[in-house]
Amino acid sequence: MKMKQTVTALMLALSSSVVLAGEVEVLHWWTSGGEAKSVSVLKGLMEEQGNSWKDFAIAGGGGESAMTVLKTRAVSGNPPSAAQIKGHDIQEWGKLGFLTDLSDVARAENWDSVLPEVATQTMKYEGDYVAVPVNVHRVNWLWVNPEVLKKSGAKVPTTLDEFFAAADKIKAAGFIPLAHGGQTWQDVTLFEAVALAVLGPEDYQKAFVDLDIDVLSGRKMTEVFVQFRRMRDYIDPNSRGRDWYSTTSMVIDGEAAMQIMGDWAKGEFAAAGKVPGKDYLCVAAPGTHGQFTYNIDSFAFFKLSDEANRQAQKDLAKTILDKDFQEIFNLNKGSIPVRLDMDMSKFDQCALDSMATFKATSKSGGLVPSVSQGLATTSYVQGAIFDVVSNFFHAKSPDPEKAASKLARAVKSAM
Ligand code: BGC
Image (cartoon, rainbow, N blue to C red; front, side, top):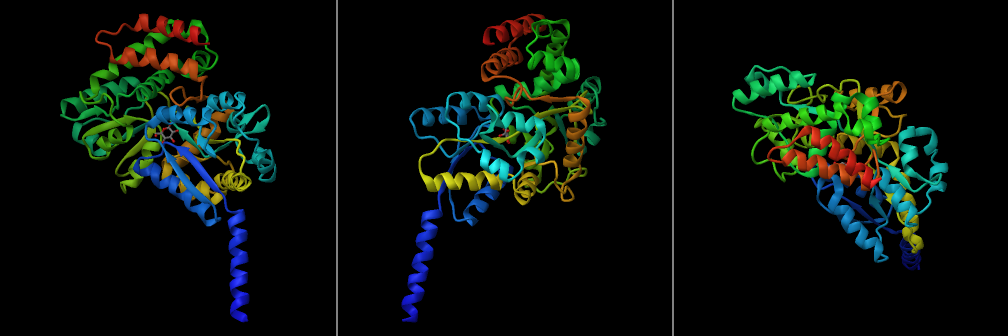
């Protein structure tokens, strides 16, 4: 009798968990060592809550391939529960009517008061949350192998002039000065760092957010292209098409001295067991000290019909902004938590600098959205900028003045 009761109780428990448990299918492009480690934390927490996790990973930094696959799935009426969608794209998906309203979770969890304004603005479509931010990445970083600098007799550069002076010494010593992966989004990552240094945050904002044609075609923009072009003399001949993380490995292994890349690169250093301040250094990209180019990773949530899966979506939304998750995920990912009320005691100096600069620039200016990461402008304008910048960088005899006017024309026609 007792046995029968136990079995019935167990079956009841199982059937209720079957009813409650849902599945989340999550599209992302986190496939490098550090990234995979980070996303597995989210998977684990969802499974702990009885939900199942269906991984929908599409490799390719910058997410271009992931976005192509997502469009096909969504258009055929079979979207995932959530997808890594950022910046202006969230508005575009919202406009198409694909995204679900997360206001009830947002209200219950107080998102409006724990998140920075740049995040809340981006996550809402027509005033309602349709996406959840995961982190804040700083994009204007220079990653340095101090050993290579030492062997070359070079010092850590803080301005563009110092960068080129150091690069000459490193080249003469037989190392690759700048590790660069020649994929379009990485070209633009390098370009926007140079642009911020040459233009300063106000003109950067005017050019890439306000799309001011005078600034886009102006004298300072020509200078941006001049400096950007100079970078090409310091990269290796095998750069074209290389992934960002293999490129980071060149700095980790001491084959190259420096890389300009967002702090997802730190996730790779961390996954390789490297210690900041000792094995590698993180400093602001040359000429951008005290400025912050931001990239906010986020998941947008799609409308689903299955009730259990809708509940699982809510669990996912809530989990992403849970303080414990924010801590572990961002320690692995290289980014900083997107919540402003976090205990940062477990974070390293790079993350502490990032958080301090993020908070300071939010108040005093100097906080600008990343073009390469889709935070600055629409995907149409972004595409136009990508084409001009990347073609210029890989051209045989590029002309900086012509590139600036081409940029202005391309942006104008994409507006
Ligand atoms: C994402 C990062 C990611 C990087 C490289 C960026 O677009 O925002 O989270 O680590 O691409 O894959």
